[in-house]
Length: 179
Image (tube, rainbow, N blue to C red; front, side):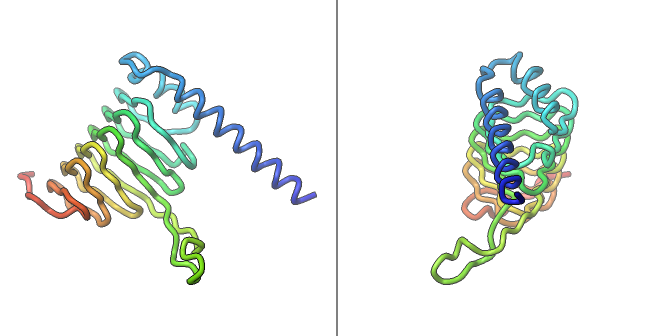
């Protein structure tokens, strides 16, 4: 009986996720949808979104309730949110198209299957006024300080202090900005 209950819960969760993705993906990308309709749907599905946000068509894995978006945030098209852990985006931040935010990773598993280690979830925090360029990959446990800029295509593996420009693979400090 326990196995059947678990199976049904898993299947129901899968169906709900498919419906969520279908609804969000079928909304066209245009100013009205991105500014008003899509944020409204996301709020109804548990995501915390501030005022004045523009959220284009994105992909979500995990719990939408784990994503918190401040006021006046702009999230461009095809951003992927892996929300096993929390993702917090501060006021006035911008995230460029095709960026990826991943909160989950694995410890190393046995030699015959390294990917089968224990699942680890770590939060991502993007503070106020941050600009994340296009195609950026942000890995678990990263905190990007207020007023920082992450250059296009960067892979962010460590936290970044405030008012810093970083870029590259892995991301390295390019310039310190005036605060």
